[in-house]
Length: 204
Ligand code: SF4
Ligand code: SF4
Image 1: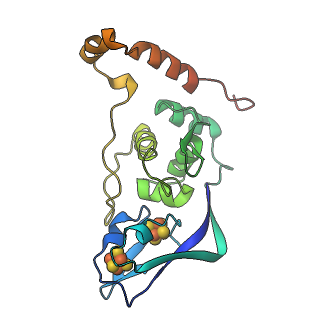
Image 2: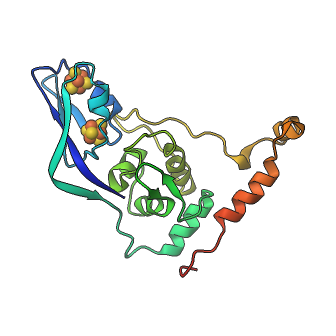
Image 3: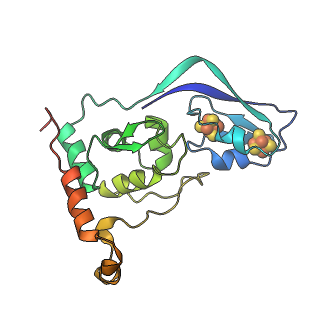
């Protein structure tokens, strides 16, 4: 969930049409029209990446007249299905998976249940991955995978890459190799499993 309070304004006198802003936008809100950058403010989630990365300093973030709430409505969804999907991806449903926006795993799962099929769509619906963008792509990819969706790069989307290995997937030979070097893989997995499966108060 994110309250979007900012929007980008492009100075067309400065824009050189390099498309950097198009490539860095996590929700595919920037496009080119007649070789100049244009922001789709309905899609924009106010992250400021386009402003920060524009080599011509042609973009300025300004305060929106009306803030926009990016939030997935949970009502009407089967919360047990959300729980199952989160746990299949090995997240506790209430686990915060984007620290910048405080988006939880259950909201990402809800976005997928409401039809999101790519990280870009999940970012648009929830606001996740519109802060630092460092940690949250992995939970997004894992929850998509748990839902049986193999995300493909969206047309025009560049801002994500493959899923990294998780604690549960470390090969036995690797565990053995590092066992006497202060790594406790199985103990870590046991602890993680207990966190993931901790009961949700009032929901199960
Ligand atoms: S990054 Fe800047 S110069 Fe390049 S297209 Fe976008 S606004 Fe124009
Ligand atoms: S979401 Fe971020 S990168 Fe995309 S248009 Fe809005 S401020 Fe720029």
